[in-house]
Image 1 (tube, rainbow, N blue to C red):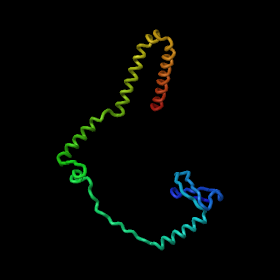
Image 2: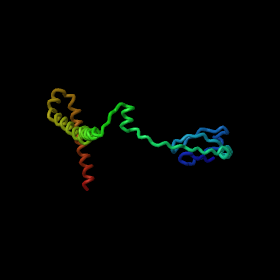
Image 3: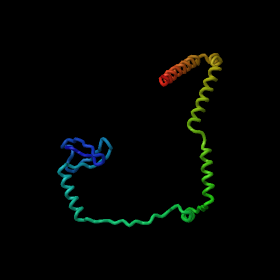
Length: 167
């Protein structure tokens, strides 16, 4: 039996015995839509019954359109929320919002630069104190050597990556 998804209209093949007379909950594998699927004969009968009921009750509903109310008038805001809004204060609010935009803080690239400076300074500090650390903690020598090997590997791979774009 072929089953069509109500939402995305994708067709699925389902064994005939999988869907009983009482129906079965199925889910579309493409869009995830769930619906109750009935056997094909029952669907045709239900559609005919629904069309008959629809023709018998043919009711037209007319919606009355109300004029749209502006909820943000100064009078409404004062009455509802106790806010007093003057036209001159709107100009000062714009200036305040523009100045607050300028004070928002650092951007993404500023943080990247700060992190780069922080890591490079820590790396330089480790480079300067490498011998002192090894003398005081001999076990740390292998870790420091491995750390510098990883840094060298990163330098080589970054330079090769940059060379790909220079060609």
